[in-house]
Image (cartoon, rainbow, N blue to C red; front, top):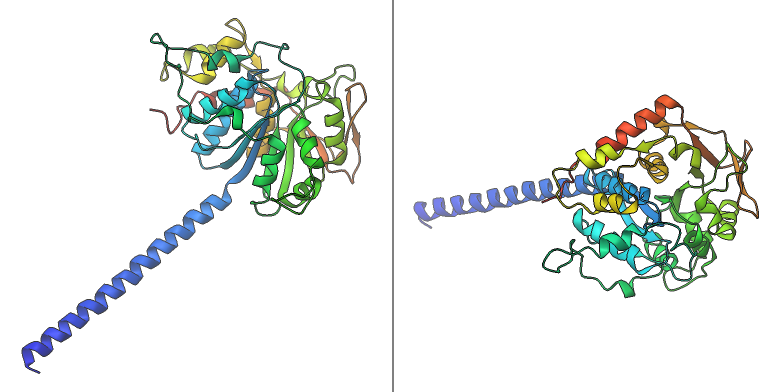
Length: 358
């Protein structure tokens, strides 16, 4: 071998060695980044949102908050389960998912649910039917067939079985029908466990908007629309439960002035249009559902919390809290200062432009 060729071989070998070394460094950096991404994703709270969207506009405000938490990387929204039976809540939810940049979020619906269509203006229907001057829909959809959306209690099983143990927070701000049906589900192709066993294994906490504990004669709407389901859930639910009652949300009103003045960055906004559809403007609206979501994601710092106990639902739909040091259920309370702080937090979050807005 000549000296020249030997040197060439040495250089070639060094190049191969250096290339291999650089590859290993780059691969290590990539895997490290992937690992960091996986850790970030795993740190996000896993949320399933259970809603009677279309009945009261606070559900739409709460849904807006969910997307903002998604934008911030605080949560992983696994699904939106609807307990209002009507063709339009699923479509409106898809409009919201698509507008905020999350069209892939699964949607579950309900059949043979509570009769509630005539209880209030159906803003989900109002927004879904909005048209542009040329006749096109006002808001984009993901293109899915709403008649083929799965039933919520079945979608729960499909999603829960895929999650780590004790990792899922369910935020229920409507009727208890889907949750009661979930508890009653038998073993199936998704899991050999019953619904109650699956909940006990996969769910960390249930956060609800339900009940009223400062007025025994006030029968709260989410409870009375399906009393048997509410009784079942508060009696049999196998994980901790924290509920935000009627008296909390009614103390914190989202202002019409924000709806009218804080959204100039979006000439057409599906939540704002829903708010305008629901009642004649201007009006302030209690934030019942938002308070339950706030606790679920950001914890107890905004609230006072009851001692442990058990929530009891009567046959007539009244709710009572029975303190018990061995209980695993609590309810939220607020004073006037906390209510104002929460209100300002809601305004700041909801009026903020979404990350995916174009």
